[in-house]
Amino acid sequence: MKEDNRKELGETFDTTVSLYEKMRPGYVDDLYKAIFEYVKIDGRSHVIEVGSGSGQATLPVLRTGCELTAVEYGENFSKLLKEKFKDYRFNVITGKFEDVELEENTYDLVFSATAFHWVPEEIGYPKVLSILKEGGAFARFANRPCISQDMPELANEINAIYDEYYNKHYNIRSGTKKWFTEEDAVNISKIPEKYGFKDIQYHLFYRERVFTSKEYTQLLGTYSDHIAIEEEVRNAFFKKIEEAIDRHGGKITIKDTLDLELARK
Image (tube, rainbow, N blue to C red):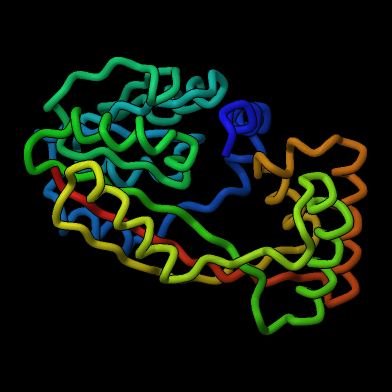
């Protein structure tokens, strides 16, 4: 992604704080279990979270008793985080991970949930490695939603709507959308090796979520690439999606793949 596009899309999140807080899901318990089996985190641990958003991934780590510092670019999200986790050993640095100063060889865990793709790879991975203690861990994870294959007619209608609005806006060729696969997780897990990490692992977890038509477009309204579409076009885009869902029973089932990649200094 070009740097100017990365910056533009990244800044859109901070404009939808309340909707993001309401609609974005957290992460499954088994994912955290895998992290904590990989690296021991307790009251003596120091942790960095990269790109906390409204804190969907934060609380299970805070509950270990660790001291956690969130590095969050959005000022509005930073304010929300400070209030939300004020009763924990928690603080926020407002800024981009690649820009903020962090002490080297200090942290037991660095983690990032559906956010590390905003950080340029050639800057992000070396920086994570530098701030981790020897033996410390990096956990990168994300939620990858996909319309259920049990709803092929609805999926086809929505794909056609994306062709008409989203693909046209971004000049994307029709029919090129690719859902996340295990091969993608394997490829992501291999990236840290290039920068000196070891003990590479990846894990996959699954779940289903069901939305009404309005709930689904509210969820889409938290995605930076959707927010960046001109409002009038976006409203028409979302209206068409809601109408399609309502024609097919008023509900849409989303199957999530949650991928976790682990690496050690």
